[in-house]
Image (cartoon, rainbow, N blue to C red; front, side, top):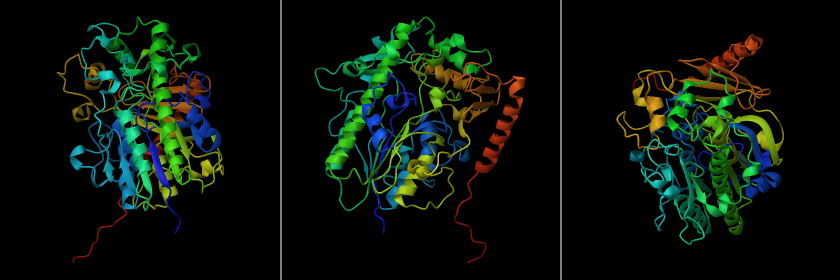
Length: 495
């Protein structure tokens, strides 16, 4: 029987797909990822998530289902015990599963025993994430209520208090994973799942990482004045509530450089993990997956963070890098094929020799990784938002939450019974992006002519045929994926 490879699922949170050096971003400092792609791995330039916020995206890539299949499209509807989760599949297949980092996948009341052998808790108590930015709702880093920094998520420099690092939860889990690799059981294949928090805002990082970023090399920011008027209302609504219109390009550059510094920090941590695998002598026997759940505005469109139902590339395009075990063929480099995050589960199944006992919609990336083909999908999809009356789908706290909450503007948008929270679906091909919006104007972009997605051409007669073709393709998508029939059939006989 073929030996099962070890699996590393390295999952940073909210990393934009364009912040990597090997994809041509001159401001990105990602030497470990760049070297891996140059020599042993494939980086998918056109990889897209299936929902632009955390929990729905994670439920999707861990199951191989789109969010609509079982209603996993909110922050509060996680994977249920009877539903398929990749970690459980691997554990049931004989893997020793070590999980270190955030959840946003299963209800804590379900417990973790079915999904992993170890749900790691560091012995040394980590310092608050982002310098305590979430905890200090009224802290000085935010400025006064009503100021143009209050909802900016910009915390700035982390005080290391003389240590080499700011020892937060991410560092605790990275170091915990390295220790585990040194002392892992030798008689089982390993799965290490590292869903860390960086570069998720608040934007905060140690000075040493911030100083690596050359602000003069940052790509052009997509500014609000570039946009046509028929953009989704949630974008203008958030801009109004964030009150960041007065920010100069210099201030935006500081925020963006901090985010890039956060990515550089994660790249360094990834490099430490790869070194640990090599030191333990198991690197060649390991399949490595590096991917994020979704992206981040980081100043584009005059916004920060993310939202629930728009699908700009900065939110939906994600890093997705795969290094197969040395026993498998690989053609290293960058692939331009359209891929989806749900393809991750199918690819893990392929390398682990697992035949799933349920219907999933991801497709193995192995033929792309081997260089046997350059095509994978004709289109990718992403979904978000809610219908009127679906108040149980609201993301954040009740309507009476205090405006001091950092996520208050986004909560206001989602709780609105106007069009801002509307259910919406994206289909994206290499050249075009069409978004069906239930309560407001649809969107259509020619990405070849308008890569920044600034001009909505939904009413452009010259693109009428393209619009209808994409609508028809979206209908095909929903018909193909609208449900999953259990593979175990009910008996019709009495016993």
